Image (tube, rainbow, N blue to C red; front, side, top):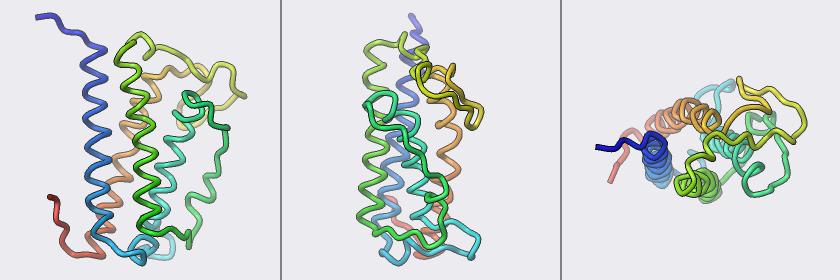
Length: 169
């Protein structure tokens, strides 16, 4: 048996990101526009905030490096109380964000040594959440693998608070 560790890691990450995308979509589809912008307390995030943050994180780490998108980050807007977003906008934003990281992973699967690329070497100096200009693609993927599930869980929790019970298929 030949274990190809990079391919195993990439396949696992692809399954995880695709599952997060699918289950988030299923949860959000059951909500109203009002549910998307509702927050449990004035200090809490809404689903709109969480979607904006997930989108911002995936944009920052993957779209700027792989799709030549301009490097912009507005974390304060991601967490702005009263952020407006419709259900359709939330679904579209999540789909686009997850599609970008899935596309990166599928391209790396063909060329696994790219896991060790450092795509931010020529960007302005930064240090964010333990990542910096010297971070590898693998480090960025694993960071998001750890980071995003907490926010996906928050989306499910808020959805259940609003809906009571969610249908998962």
